[in-house]
Structure formats: C-alpha cells, structure tokens
Length: 193
Image 1 (cartoon, rainbow, N blue to C red):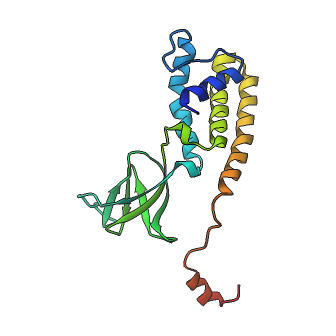
Image 2: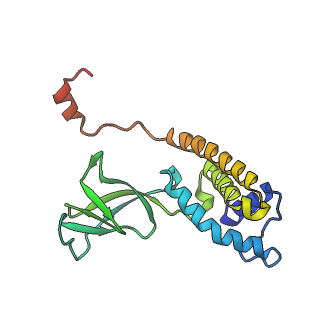
Image 3: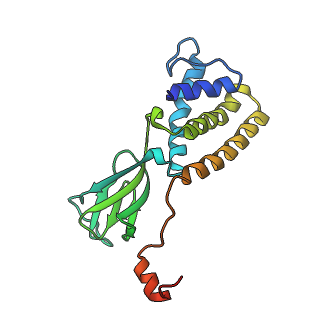
C-alpha cells in the first residue's frame, strides 16, 4: 500500500541511497527532511498536471454572500482541496465562468463543479500514478542525493517518458468527449455527419 513515505523511500532506493522509515526518521534525518520538504510540492504539481481519474471529485457550490463588484452576478468559493477546475456546469452544458484566486465567478445561483482534488491518500491512487510519483521524487532528489547533474537529467528524462505513458493510459478510461449540444450541430449541418 503506497504512502508518501514509501514513494520517497523507493525513490531513494532507486538512486542507490539509504531509505527512510518516516519523514522524521532520526537515523536518516537529512534524507527524511529532504523528502518531507520536497514531496508535498512534487505531489501537488503532479496531481495538477493531469485530471487523474483517481483524483477527481464533484461538488455543488452555493454562492458567497458577497457578489463580485462587476462582471458576474455571483462568486463561489472553491473547495479547500481543489487543485484544478475541470468542468463547470453539468451534462456537457458548460456555463460561462471565471476562476479568480480561490473563487469561481459565474451568472448562476448554483454551481456544479468537477475538479482535481489534492488526494493525499496515496493508497487510493492508480498504480501508474504511484510509479510516476516515485519517478518524480527520483528526479527531484537526484541532484541533492547524488550531486550529479547527469543523473538528474537522466531521471528527468525518465519522468517525461513515464508521464506521457501514464497520461495516455489514464485518459483511455474516459469516454470520448462530445462537442456539446448535438442538436445545434444537427440543425446547422444536417442530421448526416
């Protein structure tokens, strides 16, 4: 079962270094501190990079009490764990919106939201995402652990290759996207595509 510590430990192992037991490991304090400092940023960046199926949530938001000064009629506070907005609206009926800071502005009184959340429970991740996070930590730790820019470059190259492969596999689980209201296309272009 994957954890942040096991991901970091496996990355250290792949770099030929001593593993850690936790982020406060007194026997390997330097490596533990290094992992504790780097891992949250690497994880959050990786989760934001792609709409991983194991990291998507839905929410229905109510408007904030204070309306925006101009532009839209309502503002909606993003969920605390929101890392990336994917879709606003439902059933393929996107609505006009604007993300500003930690809020979404829109001309609606109820906002349906699909988003990437900061999934900090690595045991719920897909195996490709766990492997990718391990490689991302390898790339992040390569220079501090080995003092080799060549090793760092090699680990970063492996990460890019793995990222493309993991995104492709994850995306294959999603149904094909439609272009919106098919009735409009049928009316414009006829019923024979």
